[in-house]
Amino acid sequence: MKFQIQTKGFNDIINITDRVSKMVGESKVKEGICLLSSPGSTCGLTTIEYEAGAIEDLKRALERIAPMNDDYKHCQKWGDCNGYAHVRSALLKPFLTVPVENGKLVLGTWQQIVFLDFDNRSREREINVKIIGK
Image (cartoon, rainbow, N blue to C red; front, side):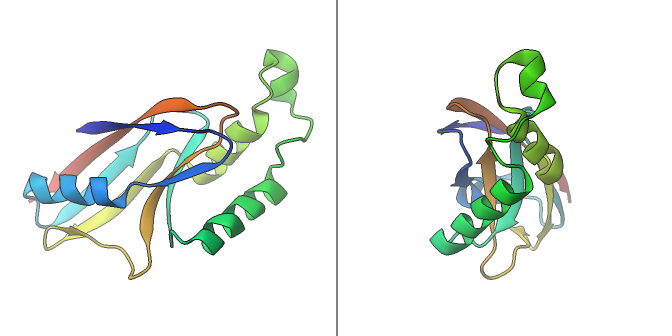
């Protein structure tokens, strides 16, 4: 299964929990795992409390770790100046595994699944969802 999302780039963080939860429910899997992936080298998937303050804190932390305006060798080679996006994706990973119990995603009370687009332009992104179990 898969779905598309439109992003703005530049650290766009999108809550995809409801879409993934619906897919898990429709799968009829009661016990197992939900594997999420996106075939991009400038994006990430993770969990966080999807709240404005926490989202801004995450963006600020990513900017400290891999600043957008740093001098990246990738930019020198390709001229697209998105080296920071590749570094951020390498750190956060474009895949995520979430347990499924009793037909529902196992997430903490304030935890949501988010897609992060680090690239320096908007894109249509694909999210692949594989639910494995019984």
